[in-house]
Structure formats: C-alpha cells, structure tokens
Length: 291
Image 1 (spheres, rainbow, N blue to C red):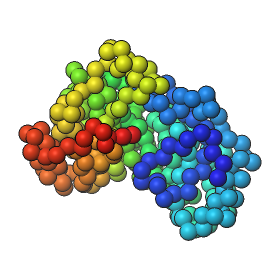
Image 2: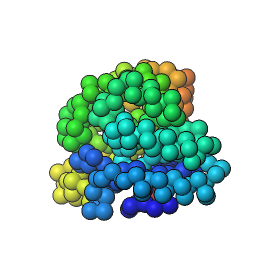
Image 3: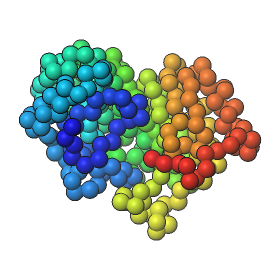
Image 4: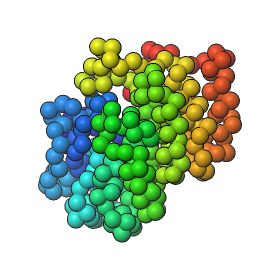
C-alpha cells in the first residue's frame, strides 16, 4: 500500500483496509493536534491514479477484510462527485467490503446535504468519526477549532438524521486547570443534543510540535492533574442524557479505563470514578499512558 507519511486511524479501525484519499487535514489549525504538522502532511487530495493503485493492491492482498477506512484527517471534505467515484471503485474492486468509515470534521459534514449523506450511506458509508473536543465555546475558540457548540450540534444531528453511525471524541484536560468542569458539562450538553452512537473520551497529552505543546512548555497552559481529569470524566458521564450510546474512556491516554452503555451503565461508571477519586481504584501509571 502506498501512503504519504504516517497514517492516523481510530482504534476500532485496526482491522480495516486503509485507503489514503487525502493527505493531511484541510483545517490543520487545532492547537493541540500534531498529526499533520509535518511538511509531508501538507493537505492535498490524492489523484485518481494513486487511489486506484491502492484499491487494486487491496483487492489482491486484502480479500478477507470487509471494512474500509478512508484516511487522512477529513476525507469527507472531498466533493460528492469524487466520493461517489471512490465508493464506486471500492464496490467494483472490493465487493466483499460491507462498511466504509472515515474522519469528518464538522465543516466537512455541513458541506454535505442530508440527501448527499444518505446517498453515501446507501453506498456503504457506515461510520463518521468527528472530533468534538469540547462543547464549551471558549475552549473551542482557544484551540482554534473553527467551530462553535451550535455548529457542532448541527453537524452531529445531520449525521444522525442521515442514519450514519456517529462517533464523537472529547478531550479531557483541554480546558486547562480552571475550566475543566464547565468544559465537561458543556460537552455533555452538546453530546446529548447530538446523540451520537458512540462517545470516546481521551486525555490531552501535549505534543512538542503543536502550539498548545509550546504553551505547556512555557507554562502559559497548565495541564490538569489526574484527580482533576477524573473530576472532568465524572461530570461528563453524569451529565450526558441521551440513551443507548456506547461510552468509551479506554484509550491508552486515559488514567481510568472505562466503557459501557449510557445511560444503562451510568451509575456503575460513576461509582468506579468515585472510587478512583478516593484512591481506592488503581490508575494507569504515567509511563504507560500514550497517544
């Protein structure tokens, strides 16, 4: 398979065929994200020949895999015409594939009409991964997300109305040491209005090649400690009101691995967090946390 640079994909796409249709991220201004800051990851859309070459490679060597993930950062930013062409190539050369997934930022989602999203769903688009990061407008502005809480809700609801599985990510710690509780509660409010099928809570780990990483290094951004992160996690879980949502806080960055279904398992998860805050639950040691 021919890739430009390192490929970032969600943990749940570990067994998927990964086809790189864009390089980098069209926004690439988020202060915390270092995935696409290298020059080799300058945003571009791969041409038809490159994409077809990789699909043909997959057709020869990946015959048992039934899922495809379209990389890089926001493949959904492609025009509907290009996406339909790529989906047609996947159907032609990888007929065993039953599910297609991709990253889609809120702007890319809103660039599509409901009818266009439904058309993509009918051709196999099963899941969109969207980085909410925070439901707090102040935090979104600080991290240069280019979105507001309301624009995020609009995008999330559009995906849901189209019948596509929406996975939304929240970053614990992104509000610093003073805004964590508000960040968690506002994120829970936004998520409840979006009603995604899956919520993934990760912990911020500042990277040296990012503006936020530099702010952390010079002391202008202070990272919350494990107790404050757990308090954010508690408020997030406690305030999400939508039901039948898979909640996951078991990424390698998390101090306390948790997973369950909200609201069914809410009380059990809150109990686990309470025990951890009281020092009665073992946390993941710092040296074992990773992105």
